[in-house]
Length: 313
Picture (spheres, rainbow, N blue to C red):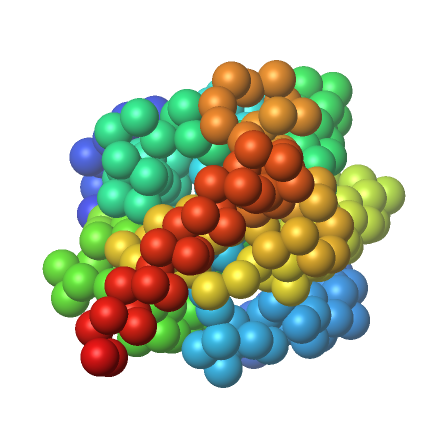
């Protein structure tokens, strides 16, 4: 059945795209969309079964961890969309260039401002696992652009599918505003029908002029993209285990001195060469060991005890 979608292609925002939906029975096993679907099944299942994702789906997600995950997405999509812009006229990717419909960077900037404030850029940094992912995306975009489709497919098709489930879970678990602040990343305002758009996207992938070897490399790259995502999930899971109860209003959690000190956000800033206060826990413990401070604390305790005794009498 013919359909019409308002959209953009090749940088021409606002252009009308007319397309016919691709019926399932017209898809060939050698089509790129089918090769990707079958070739990444195992990776997809493994990603869904990482501890971070399983906890997320059950609503067990701390706000601070969600903020870090959103920051990771910001760095990832900034790299991906930079390379997509670079290759928007390259025939190996141009048919899949939908900036108006798909690009997420601007939405993620809004989420960063909501969670971290106007000076959000000074409060976030790219984690080690995310940096590996970002570096690979830049390499592909600049040296092997025919593989860029693997990263776009892995991210955007997932965002239009399971990502919509995560949006609802996050909004409910974190008690985010009904105005959808903090989850702009999941809002595809220029796609009125996600299912139809995914069909269009797969049809465009299948129409790319690619030989068998290139298709196999794209599937391999998609599996690599899944691995990068799983490494980010594992990194977040480890950070989550080191977080204590979060401060009210989404404040930064304080490291309790247990586990890996490097996971303490204050310590991470120090490693990154950022000026700022030391970790509250370790600063307090260091001061508490000083004789003068111990004497002052003892005096305070004595005064408090005396006041309590007077009150009881």
